[in-house]
Image (tube, rainbow, N blue to C red; front, side):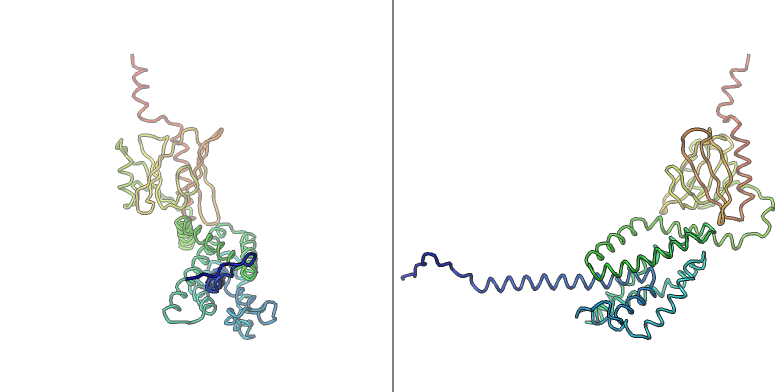
Length: 381
């Protein structure tokens, strides 16, 4: 068989099939990026709804209605947000939230009511973005978007509970304005760079789950303190006695730590605050023993496991610090640097905390009992 030789200076053309493959690859990449953009917008709207649902819908509706933005073909389903009725209702509800969100404890009550409303609203927004290709797909989108909204809502509610421990309203006003700014900034970022918005959202969700145990413990502690304050005794001057045994669920924890078989002088239930090697917001008890006045033991359960820390009181000062929502027992070094501890008691337990401070003040001037036999031996003839 004879073959036609290639002519000098004439390049051989690529087979047309390779060009078709390149076009298919580009089409697949473009389709993937488009789907990621859709997912970013859907989950982004859901997350912003967890912070402020009504502002998210109100601003998005205004932008669509007045053509501040031009919706791409894949986002035409969001055009319904530009309906005047939707804008009006969202605007009225945002007006109410704007003021409720800046009043201490009213904001937390508002968050409680919206624990169900925000996830539902976030799920509906995401479904509106991604459409209804199949019932199964709709359910999956609703679950993902609703969960994303709930994460953002929980983070916001926990932050508000923490700020409400102070009676002044300035922290609430600052947080509220910051949340509104975050919603506006998030909407702008989704418009200009949806993939970057998705990346920030994923980092935020990962951070939430990393700090979730601390966040949930903080929420539980603040709710418990608020409940105790509302249901506390009217007369706080009623004399009280220090409990002589820890709560039943913590008795075994103290027994494991009490290797010297010391006897309990008193055991006061409390919540841990800041302290060296003691996580915050653990529900436990402070235990003092008769044998050693220079130490206390904090016992608790962390994630269901026994937790105990010995606190050395030698050279420390113990004070009582009243707060709006609680009574704090503060332990700090009398001079120089050293570990500081904070333990939180319910507001009605003022007399109990004062009694602990008085007891420790008297006992810290006494020597430990295990040191006394040696002293007696030295004095004997």
